[in-house]
Image 1 (cartoon, helix red, strand yellow):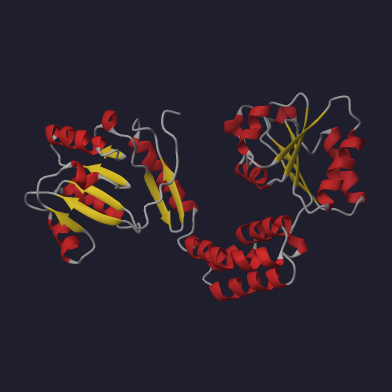
Image 2: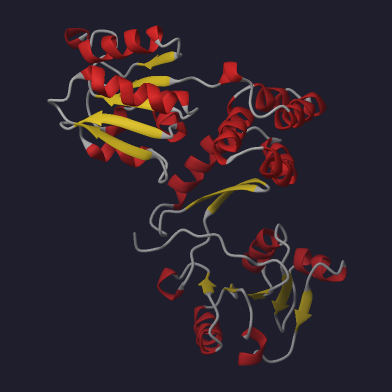
Length: 333
């Protein structure tokens, strides 16, 4: 990556936008979604939208000469005058002030790129292509807009308000299971359907009662990557990997698939010559500790001998087992 993806804290800090036209108005629109103090640096005639924003007190106007002092201490500077010469001169002044600068339509002068944004505040998805393919970024944004329900941010905000209570009543593993349940089971479904109060009550009751309902916590998931490369992984397979607390795989497995997992998920390589019974004992121990366990394989879990043995072991231990098959051609099933 040429750019490092990171969210910048701007609450209570200044964002300076240089320019008085449509491009500057677009950046101002974006900045207004934050809790930053917005300064419009423009000496000429203002776009009607910008003039209205300033008149309403949502931004301050700096109409005199732009000096280093204008940019000092700013969290971010957008330069959008529409004139390359003016943009270059302002860029030099902003850099002298040590500011992080974005110059519209001039990637070579940008310290930071403006991504396509999916806003479900406080849930925010930023999509970037390092300036190479804005059209692709917009296409991905459209897909994400469809995937994330409009009121998902309200659920996330509720969780934020309940985090202290959960930390007081629950241990680390119970909290992780609780939040996983909130975002994958009935609370999220209720929120999506407009039943916010019942969902909130269910979450509060779960915290008071020691954690998520046990029936929502599976023990083992057999995840198959299927045939082909990583781009052939099913969405459900990827989701189970992202939810896993500990992932088991054999020594011949392609480790690149582990990139789908959470960074803090434990990875356990089962030696190829290790009896499957030994592996299943390790997995059952993890599952009984309320950890989500995944067995990751390239094979079809419906016909794989190892998977069959793991299913039997978990059934004997009276633990749940889920199978998520990959994509296979008829010849390999």
